[in-house]
Length: 536
Image (cartoon, rainbow, N blue to C red; front, side, top):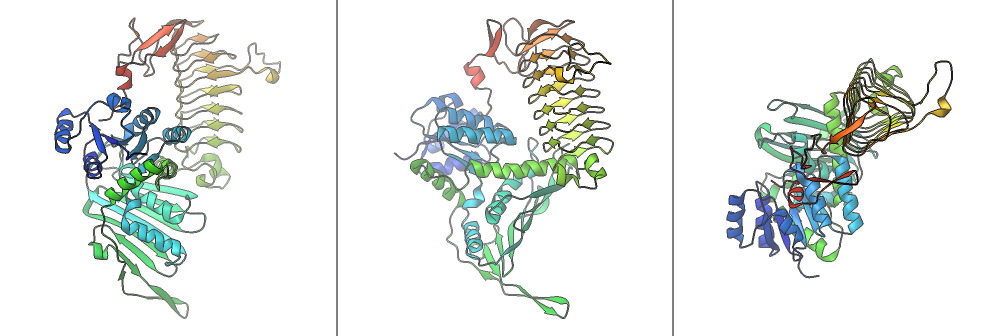
């Protein structure tokens, strides 16, 4: 294969460094940035054209793209690039949602395209030397690892300090441990922006015994970037702010015993010789090599998902603020043993045999019955009953006084308004048992059910449909349909964003255009639609 030709998407605070580096490597052929003035300046400086995302992805002469857009856009832009046949180097984090990250990795695997995540420190000569020391057994058995990444600023509002700073450190720790942790917990504090922690500490234990923590903050009086690896025979310190001749040091400390008292034996630090190299250049060279040869990147998409898995669990622990599960407490078990990262109010009940995803909250007087599965990042309001044997997808919101009975399935992102009703028998009698006559009800992804609405069993609610408050649904509802009344009848269409569509079938919130063919609503593939994946 010829030398890969690369375009950089997003040329802001960090993207401009990627533009410079790929230009120095002779691989840069185009740039994309929503700031036209910035794009023009970089275009002139590095003698490459700039264009829109659509133009770059449609250019068959461009082999690969570097995604340095805001973190919230990483997954969407990366998927677009993969589908356009491009190899992708995406800056950390791979996505802000674990499921999105898994979809991206699955797509790259399906298309057999290179996907690499920008965990920069995995390419630092000092870290590579630490990794070799651990691999060679020079430090003995791993006991404890920690990483501090501290500074004053750069503050963000779209991602907290955990997601902004910690991915690099978690990537290093997972690489050194050679396994994923079996327990993760995190604590943090918020001072500047509501619900955006500025300081976090994440604790981990690994199946083979080592423990680790990551301390990150953008409210710190001085800058620190330090990794410490404690082994049974020696300790290694990687201080990224130190000069190259002392950036990595080994301490052969030991312990003797004075009777029953341990006494430290201190060794002098020994600097490990390193070849001074720019980590970013090494990282970019590695990406080009993998695109050229088909080799798997050191920090491929699967490695990115492992890091995100830890981040998501730590985030769930932060959100729960010392997670507690009522049923587990009554059974004298800790929540981490039963449902890690889940908050269950002390007045709620969770039966045995229930699966609940990280980040989910179960509030006052609710009950999740046996055999049920509730996905990640759901919210079950007060006096909610789930089950038995009910499946609720990820990111569902079930408001107060809702019962989801056996036979009902909610896919991802379903909203159930207060006191809405699901039935599971068509003709119930108090004195007649009809448990063998339960009929199924399926609510598809993104649908909304208004307050006090009734969904009669045996129906299917289409994806992103909207059931008006107080309506009674007695038959299937088409995807995106807006229905009201008793019995419910369709009066219009709703967009993915929950906005009613006018005669032009254009979403007033996003500008996305739809079309109706034979009673089926679908998105129109237009330039405006393609441009909805922001790269700013």
